[in-house]
Length: 164
Length: 164
Image (tube, rainbow over all chains, first blue to last red; front, side, top):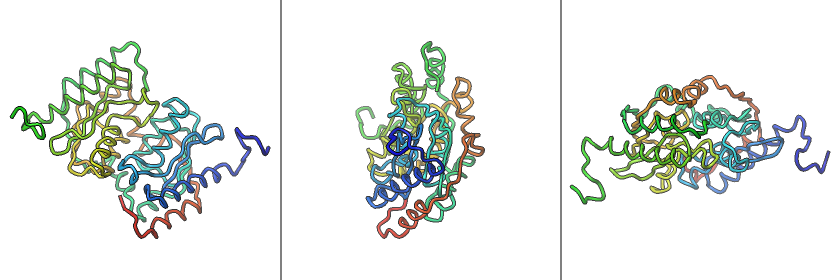
C-alpha cells in the first residue's frame, strides 16, 4: 500500500530497513566524531519513535550509547517509561548497560547486527564489561546507612507511589 | 577546618557525609514523586561533581536511575567521559545498567548502602535484572547487516578516532 504513512507494509523487509536506518545513524555519528560506530532505532507499531547514534564523545557522557539515547527519546515521545510493544534495532549486540536498560524499559524484542566480539575486535570493552557484571573490577563497598534505610521505608509508606 | 570550602578534612566521616547527601536527594525525589527511593553522588577530590535522585517517573525515562544521572552530570562538569579518580556514593547497590555504566565511566570506587535484595523487598526488579544479563528474558535476534559491518570498518579506518 504505497502512500500509507502510518505503517508501511514492509513485510519481510522490516528488520533490514530499520537496521539500515540504525547503520546510517551510526555512520553519520562516526563522520561527525560524535562517538563509536553504533546506531539504534526504537520502533512502535511500525514507526520509529526514538533513534540515535552513539554520542559518548560529543557529550562527555559515558552512558550515551545509541540504545540508551534511543530508549530515552522513545520514552519522551510515547510519554511512558515502559516501552511495552516496542522493538529495538541496534547495529551491535547491546552491552550490559544497554541490555539491562532494555529490560527496565520492557522492550519486547531486540534485533542486533554485530556481536560483542566484533566490538572487541575494534577496541571496545563490551566483552570485559559483561565479565565485570558477575565479577566487578571496581571495588563495591557496603556502607550501611540509617538515612538510606529510612527512605526505603518512606517509599513503602507512600500511599500514591507508582511502582516501575 | 570549618570554612575550608574546597576540600573539608572530613576524615573518617567522608563516606557517611556523602551517603547522607545521597539519602537526602533520594528523600526529596520520593517526596516530589520524581522516582524511586534512590540517590547518588559522584565525588572527585573531596568535592561533589555530580548528583541526582532517581527521576524515572518525572521524565518517563527508564534509564534515569540516580547513578546514571550523577555520572552524566559529573562527565558534563569535568568535561570528560572517563571519570577516573572519582568515587560514587549511592543509596542502593547499583543495578546491572548502573554497574556497567560505572565501569564504562572508569569510576574508581562504589559505596552503596542498601542491597539489591533490600530493593527487591520494596518491589524493584534489580535482582531479576541481574539474572537477565546472563539469561536475557527479552528475545535477542541476530540480524547480520552489511551496512553495520561497513560502519565498523569505517571506524577502524578513521585516522583521528578517539577510543573510549
